[in-house]
Image (cartoon, rainbow, N blue to C red; front, side, top):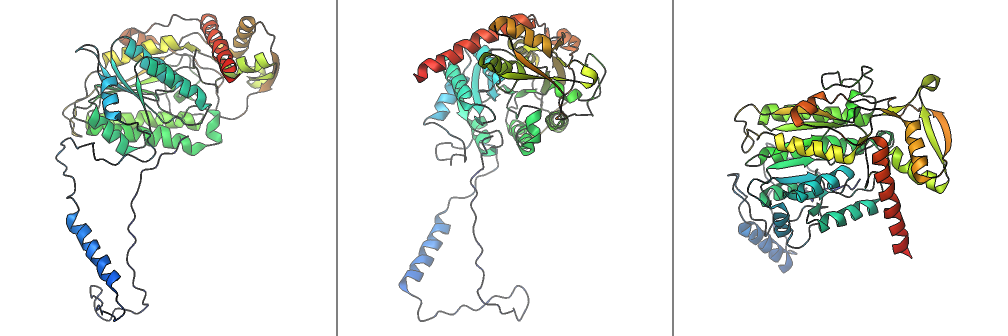
Length: 439
């Protein structure tokens, strides 16, 4: 993941070279003697040093007034294009007075791209933020960015951990809503790079909530949790009322931590927060680390694919949810989100706090997924069945979506075969296009 560190200024203390001890109290001063060798350059140095301190501008006040961005130092790591403030404001402007103004974090990601386009297509104002990390091929993220730009969505390259960048962004645009989709995804990768999950899913989330807390007015927040929070829960289908205190992976633990952090900021600062537990989202412009994606890649290349099984050949199943259905759930959550009750970091009253499952309610065995891909690709897969490794994966996921149906009007309509057909069509078109462009 792209690590973005703010610029820090360090002033080294002037330490006496003498090893002698103070003879009086610790507040005594050494006598200063002017040695004959003190040159004109020394006097000039002292003169300019004093001039610097006397001419330095006073510290910025904390009155909450809008600071000038014209002379502000750009945050370290953020790649801001010339006139970025103007571009951000133009992109954030809704087509109607009732339209939303939404900051979408992780905008160059899979779900983020689809949500940003859907918002823009219906007339809302949208600004994207993404750090374009290298967890998977950055070329795919850049291609999504190009797609978004064609739709009129401006994306800022930066990290949610960059508090200075977020502060400037919230000063530049008054967001009514934040759709927080930036995260370090993937269950298995946590065993290789655990710190990246803390950096993005915990620290980055807190950094964003701090910016939202200090905004005036505060935006309403919708963010991506995960079905992984159900962990070792054996009761199916998974309901929002079920226990989520037995995570099976670090990824799940960080998402569970995010839910508790959201509760805290809602309680203390009056932020309106809605969490969405996604269940195995798939579709065009998807993530290459997902099974349906790399199965497609390996089947077309004639490579062996590994299909994991539980103990005694138990079937592994997932509640695969098509991207368009998830996007509808995201927009419904934004549309039904009530306003935050805080102002400038101070709570004025109780605020809305919600959590919903967004799944398909129809778990499908991974073997069935492979069979559908074989049919669509017209290629027989070379399969190898292996016992599931202890890497944080669970045997099955199954969403109870009755609460989302009741309160959001959420109703998934795409079955796995229909969704994979759309994915395969996009996959072949995208990678065939890449081959032609490289000729």
